Amino acid sequence: TIEISSRNKNFLEPIIRTDEILLKLTYDNRSIYDEIHFTIKMKGEDGNYFLTTSNIDTLKIEKGCHSIAMVLPAGYLNDGNFFIDILAVANQKTPFIYEIDVLSFLVIPEPKPIGVYMGKEQGYIRPNLNWEKL
Image (tube, rainbow, N blue to C red):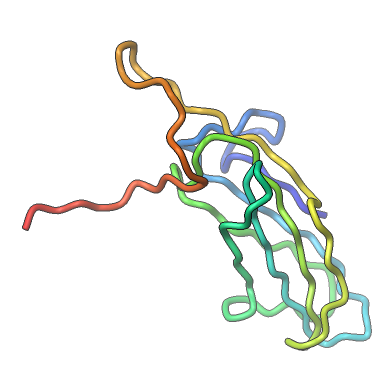
């Protein structure tokens, strides 16, 4: 199974742009494969991919039932509709699942004070990067 929600919120609550976003995968590896990894591809509402991530270097999934999660930092995504593709690969070389648009979700804008810009910024990501005076 694949689930997405704001971290530390009920699954049914809306995802707000300033929330951490939790992507959870639950998988029962009863296959003939000793080890699998997942690759997640994320695309925007226009169908263009902007993020690919995998657990290949960070977390190995061996036989048995496992739940794993990835967290997108608060404010990482812009508001809008997003779609997720998932790829499962065995023993680092054999893809055996590739599902397109397996999940879609909506990120809504954060509440803003009256008088500030209320429009949507362009782009898929909008992280708060550190700026410093030189």
